[in-house]
Length: 340
Image (cartoon, rainbow, N blue to C red; front, side, top):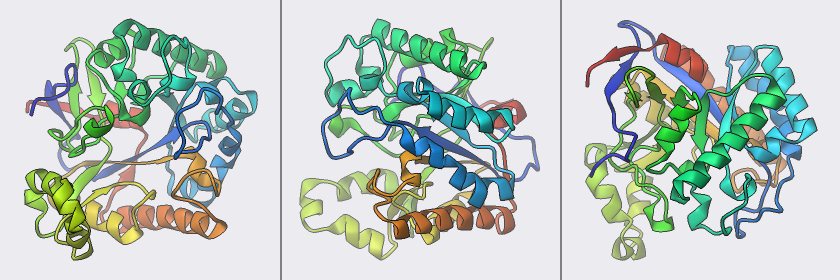
């Protein structure tokens, strides 16, 4: 299985020898919408942005974490949302990057549907124009040009790498290892691992920071070929995937408090750290900090558990794995090139 065009690893990206494990936090900072309904250009509310301070008060500030808020068009062009995030940026408490949701990002020259919700499925010229408009809007609102990108719905395409390079981006955080979105028309990242890598032109290399995702369990080494088979229709009818996860024989875990327990996040990070993984990326969606906006946080109790999971994992990463926290941009600055 080949890499996505434009995102082939030119070289692995490594921290200096002896550097402790590093964690970056990347927040998909976006409008609120019904995840179970069709995509709509009318869903542009951004009231949850004001709640991002909760994570800073309860978690980030105490650990010295500087998250990267990758923001989309409704956030970048709504005054209250910009004010809330710019105050954090100006205080050195966050970075601002780019998150492209094509259905709410102009120019609106394409039909709104599931296929087109993956920006990489759009014509290259339209993808570039959307990215140009959004990049410009963020630069105007925040007085600083963004250099970190994460595709909405992880929707990279064959022209995305060139578009990012042309606009001066330095880091991409879109790839989800061991995962395919092909059933919904999206990209296939099954061939990718969690190792960061350099891609693009040697004169201006971009860094890929994958969304930390791996197989755990005593069948973890067989995950790349076994997990897709457990997701096949016959295996799903027999609930073999659920059995494998409950018995901890094989589970695919993404480093996120959305859909994963604290114990699962610890198992994932611990397994990867023992295998020599240097860099970890934790992510979630900004609306999850308000009850009722995402499937992961439906109540006040869910929200409390969500924040507790965040705090618990940060404590584990620092105290038990000996890890440190760095922003996406700072990680790039600390990297050295090592040939794959």
